[in-house]
Amino acid sequence: MNSKNLHGRTSRYEGCTVMGVLSVSAFLTDAVTLIHGPDGCTHINTSLLYSTLAEHDIFRIPEIVSTGLGEDEIIFGGEDALEDALTTVCGNDPAAVVVASTCVSETIGDDVAGICSQSWDVPVIYVPSSGFLGGTFTDGYTSTLTALSSFIAPPSCWKKNTGTVNIVGEKNLEFEAEDNFQEVSRILGLLGLDVNIRYVRDITVEDIGIFGDAELNLFREDKYGILGRHFDAFTGIPSLPEFPVGLSATLDFIRDVGRLTGRDTTDAVSAEEEQLAGLTDEFSDLRGEYVTFDSFGFQSAEMEMFTEVAEAVGIRVSEEGTVIPIPFCMPVGTLGLRRMLRQWRRFIDG
Image (cartoon, rainbow, N blue to C red; front, side, top):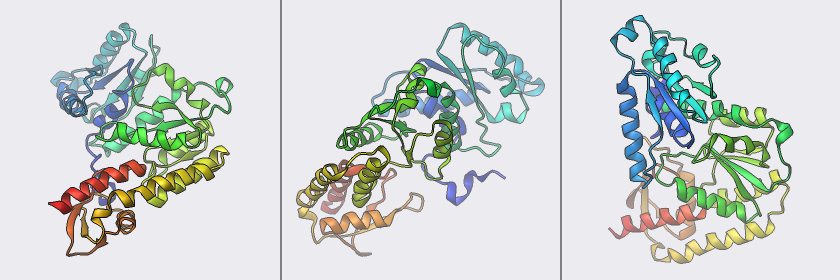
């Protein structure tokens, strides 16, 4: 059964599995993504990708190629088309090729894995990504992140005590991706930690090799622990499952990072408490206002966090209050809360 429509799997980020692959592979700057399917699959997904990137003022065009399966290949098999395309793409000497299958190529039974495992002049990574057979955007995203871990250098090459953290699985298509990264970097900096690599956002294949140098893996959002289990087993590096969201969660995040990296958090927590206290002063004009939260039936309404923020600022939650829509993406850290409260102010002021 295709579980993509089950309520528990519904989110803004669900959709075509191929798009999930592209949301990662397109940010590997020296690799090519080869989509094994009809040109329509490639056209629809790349058009959406390009338009989304343009909205974010990102004008770099990722290298994406289609095997262009037509009627003959769909009837008689498309393996020859895949081999021909791989020969051409590898001949251009990219650092790697990420091959994404599609509903069509998986349904007709092409041995994509077998062809990708042949000897090629450059590394070829296969990511199964057929939506018709049960895949979702998240499956493509997760599978690509795990598949690319094969480029991590062996443990004998890892450096120790580097004071760095890997940022793993950023949601590259969310509008706030850079703001969220800057906020997390700021918080890590309170503990004297720097970012090792952003896996995978605007890095090269070679960059992935230093993944093992980090003291901590920080996942953008690993709700079900799929990525955590993979990378914990693969590298043994301790990890945290998500970016900090909320007032108390941000302070807990600092304590957790300190615990896992062996750092004292006293000064960092105090500094962040001052930042959080500043929110009360900045939004004192909202004290005594009434609001209610609306998830519109499909966002994840983490009401405890919103209620916590409202109470801290002096806003009262009531069904009769101004309707505040739940954001698609939860606010990260203290600066994320500040941006969210500015939106609340605009709704309240009308």
